[in-house]
Image (cartoon, rainbow, N blue to C red; front, side, top):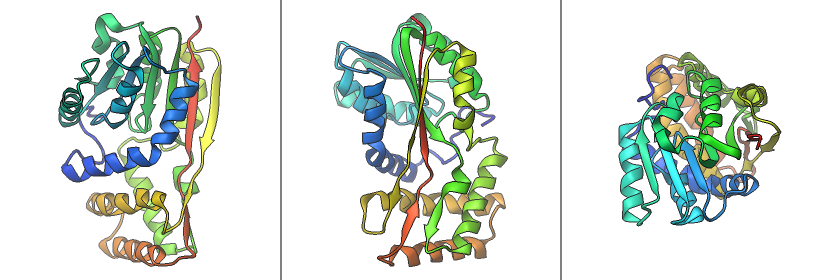
Length: 277
């Protein structure tokens, strides 16, 4: 993303709702990552690309008033949503700053070097210079602090709909091409361990969170709410024709009505790096 105030998927009410559902579906995976990073009551956490603050509200509840959650978010609308939600829930220890995640140290100011953990989910695949963000996160952590990143590797190759559908596969290729055209890196996690080590981190753990979904299952909602929101953007950008988009949605609706269908969702890779004490 060349403009840090732009969010590729939009910031309207439809996207706010989609992000809320997405977080709820992936909240358990986030919580496991936080547990592995030793986030607990009293911890200080830097939320990188915090969006409207859905994960941050969970973090604020977890760390409690003795802890701290600082979000850095490029969208003014999302920053306002974060701070409004925190105020409504009485989380005085959780605040968001509107700014570029490439400049975490500057935004953290006197808090730089004090955080026990830093967290980024589905953020680094969209930024212009992920390695710089990792270096900035390293500088914001206290000795022994941990950086948790959850993001993509092999997005386009991994999504599979069963039974197979050429129209669906063409749509996935169009979505991936539209992201690449903006500078997004859907293989970012393949480079993450090296980026973390180059930034100065010591040990790096890597895991994969692989999910499938069937039409009657809760996780089916994750792609189901994404396609109608994003496919029109892909058409507008010229990476799918309207006929191809319609065929994609027809294939998805047919799968949604097929009790034997399932989708292999894009794997989410998790890397946790430790700053030397």
